Length: 141
Image (cartoon, rainbow, N blue to C red):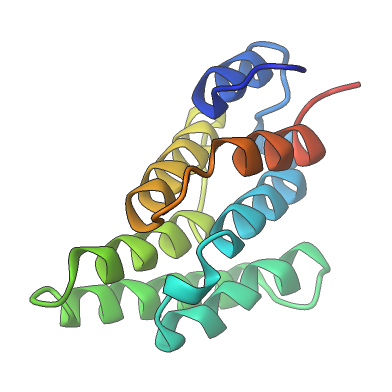
């Protein structure tokens, strides 16, 4: 799909069935790669937790591992409430990738929030990178 706005593209992909619980691995890889666009801004304490997403997709981490990583990321976030806004938002992007979804709409929300958090952290416009990532992992043929 050739849309230039990643949020419009995400809506288009959702409308065609590309964002769903049935495509969990695709959504997680999408989120993992969206987070990687701000890798240098993600605190070291949280960056290691992001790898749990990749391990989970490759069946090398369990749902419990994902939950433990999410809880650890939230604990870190809560402990740094008086630090820079960008540090908290980078942490929230990773938390989006570690989410435990119950509905298709939660998958969509996690991706949308993750892009929001990453955009607020980066000094550069990430729209083109986001569109490329969305097309690679979620767009249906």
